[in-house]
Length: 215
Image (cartoon, rainbow, N blue to C red; front, side, top):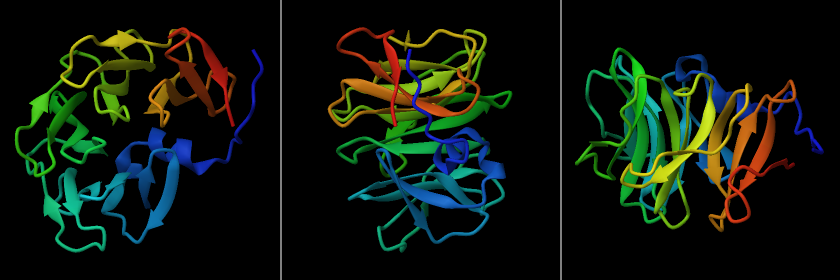
């Protein structure tokens, strides 16, 4: 398998991999692009942009919560407002839902979804292992995420209602930060299977286990 390095110093994979309390900058993420957002140490990525607004996580209230603000930075609202650790917000394509990671049980991560106003917070995964970084498919029907439920971090996909949770990768490396391609036929993710963090791609139409490296 040919490997195309994306560079050990690429900041984007590192940002997604590190725990939020270790990150000192925030970004607006629009699929595979990044734009730096004026911020401080309290307001950390992942952050996602939608015409509805910008959703991000912050510990400004001494607890990591999901916030929504207008695209000009006004009207910043705490959506989760609970004692658990809430991170990794990701808008659905139509802006009506936000998927995120919460830590309700013994600080382990689970995937949740809520309405864009913070109502109807619904748990989608329920597993003793950690589940992180949900991202919607372009049509909103599926959610990709990564989990250590099989011993190490691997890429998974499920329906947007939490059903049909399926493992897509299987190796001893750490796989994380999954995102769908714009057509929804591929999932791109970061892996250290070759010794450093590179971007890989799974073609869901050809074979869910077929993986190749991309720039």
